[in-house]
Image (cartoon, rainbow, N blue to C red; front, side, top):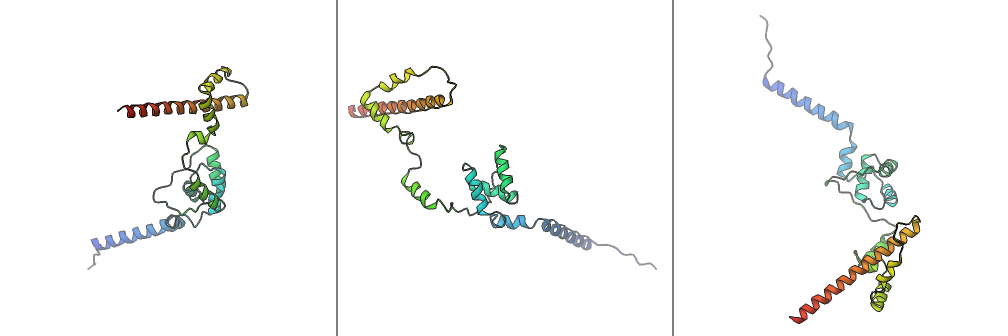
Amino acid sequence: MAEQTSINFGQIFAVAIVGYLVFRWFTASNSPSTPSSSRNGGRSRVSLAHVEQVAQMFPQLDRRTIMWDLQRNGGSVAATTERVLTGRPLDTPPPSFRPQIPEPATNTSSTGTTRQAKPANPDLITRYNLANKVTQQADAGEATTSGSSSKPPGWSANKNERAEALKRRREEMVLSARRKMEERDRANKAAAAST
């Protein structure tokens, strides 16, 4: 008599598990650098010199974002630069991407002392060097506002004249805001003194 062979559930299950493991092994072996580079913060393919080079060209970009883009494009400074120059924003790195980014070696001593000596958000009078105009304004009263009425009423065709007009307008706005703040402080002091 002929013997019948049957396949039981255990054999099917074992073949499925082995097939899955073989599939995972082949797909993981195609890109071995991706998991390891994300585990060690991308240090295996991205040079800190490349990050510094891009950061010097585009100081408005975050070093972490630059490092993420360099890691994604294989460390190509040219590709990252081209992407920024064409106006495409760099992708935001995921929260799990935490590279160790040192401060620039050339400016560490100077930036460390400047950060301590200079406050993070200086007042507008200091930022725009208007201290001498504040003292002139205090001495002359409202002469600065009457002097500003002599400027030409229209938009000038000369680039330098436009820049000067915008600078004057910015200074007038800062000084006007300062006057209003001083008046409000005086009113608050007078109200506090009367009560």
